[in-house]
Image (cartoon, rainbow, N blue to C red; front, top):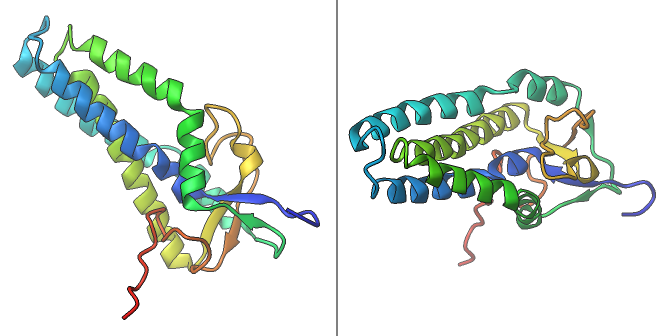
Length: 194
């Protein structure tokens, strides 16, 4: 970074970074949890887990949307000296910063299987699904505005930091073709050369 440029990470990529680990750790812990009958029994555990999955998915997908929308509405244009972080780097940094939280969540989901089989794992998976839904919502917003949203990397430091946290004061925006991630944070599909 030179001449006052900032390192910028895609907002949708940061949101989406936790979706896959939460989903797969949730599925794994729910599957393992089904092996034990638990205090409530498998049927009640799975039914409770299904309710938790839906509730967690909806809560995570809808949480802080007003804050995201407010930050997006006043986003300033990224400067020519700003450095756009690659999708893979953003995902790796988020997962490294949250690895202990993910491990604790997985262990808690496994431990809850003794009370209600699969319920904790389904809750975890619901959180992952909610993050996918939120990143899709951000992607639709980016498509409609024809502008990708970015957040300063230094505002994402720390294990619990997220792109709509208190430390984030503004977003930056670029054209829809900037960076290596599509709107919504997924990998950008490249045309195969013929």
